[in-house]
Image 1 (cartoon, helix red, strand yellow):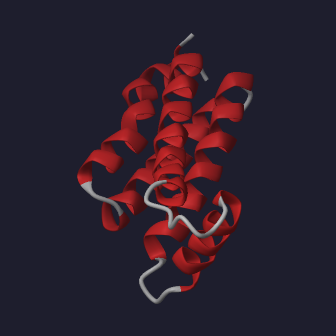
Image 2 (cartoon, helix red, strand yellow; image 1 turned 180 degrees about the horizontal axis):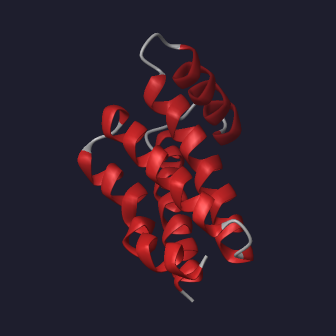
Length: 118
């Protein structure tokens, strides 16, 4: 049960990062461009600028969160997934602000329980 709760918390982290991207793409668009054209240009701009490490790492975080959510729901390598979450949290400390780090680290609440049941 603990692995499923940790997986749900991982989905929550992925949704937070997806929300950041959705706000970036669909808020404050110019009127003369279509929605999809503006979103495409915004993504290209966000990923090609010199200060784009936040957006690149946020895409990596989305994919990591979804991958270890699947692993936690399957329960086969739950302990290894928790170590990946720990490594992800350690990297997030240096990349993100503290609220995002806390959201990434939420599944670690169940680290000891998952480790005991592995």
